[in-house]
Image (cartoon, rainbow, N blue to C red; front, top):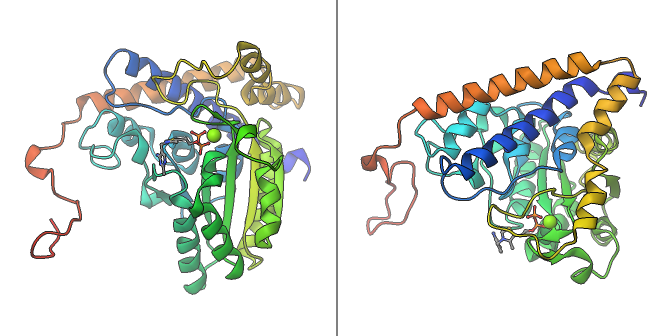
Length: 327
Ligand SMILES: Cc1ncc(C[n+]2csc(CCOP(=O)(O)OP(=O)(O)O)c2C)c(N)n1
Ligand SMILES: [Mg+2]
């Protein structure tokens, strides 16, 4: 694929939007304005961006406890994500889900599933629906290295493979499942090596290079749309912040963190854009300003929105009552 076919500038905007949105979330959290906890995606932006650049609103993306980046790349509005984080009734889950459940079915972003590995069989199910309805839609499940050691991973990938389902499994190997180091819980070098066991293609990609992710995802998504079945893509990446907002990161060294900081996908792409003559320092600065302004608007929207009504607590909640009914 020649570089002129790759939407580099659009992807830069998406990656920077994710980065700036999460920096703001972190700030708001520290100020006590966002409740609960946050699992930030800072460092991994190239993965969501490179994959979602191939998806339309009719395709499905499924995420995890770390869903802001996937949701932004899939086109969920910043305002309804921010309102959800503020637990406001205008949030994408009406303020009842919080950070770990953001999503919006109008743009094909399935509200995120925080059970590690839980989205993997669900993606197979959604892909089965896409196939049975004879569409060319695809489902993409994003998950971590930790999820690849859950039973749901093995069951989900096997089922996707035997039924040739239009699903792409994107493992974001950021080297840690919370504080557990990848190499201490895997005998294989790559998660993608396991693809052979299910009879599907496996790809190992530099997850800090959005062009590499875009290229690999394009191949896998095209194959899925054309009836060629699933793919497992492993993106080697790194979260540049703690696992959640209460993580002192004592399980990894400052040197390791610094070495990944040097691989940061955003300055890497900025350099490429300048070299290709697609941007200048001034134009990149202007993009940054526009993004900050959009985030200001999202925060203002969240702040002026009402909290959910206590009387609505059980609305939209499905549960088995004595009568077997639904609230
Ligand atoms: C089934 C299950 N077990 C444990 C947890 C608690 N937990 C939340 S995130 C996490 C680590 C997940 O690691 P990984 O899949 O590598 O994703 P990452 O956090 O690195 O993005 C754990 C153990 C959970 N949410 N679900
Ligand atoms: Mg991980």
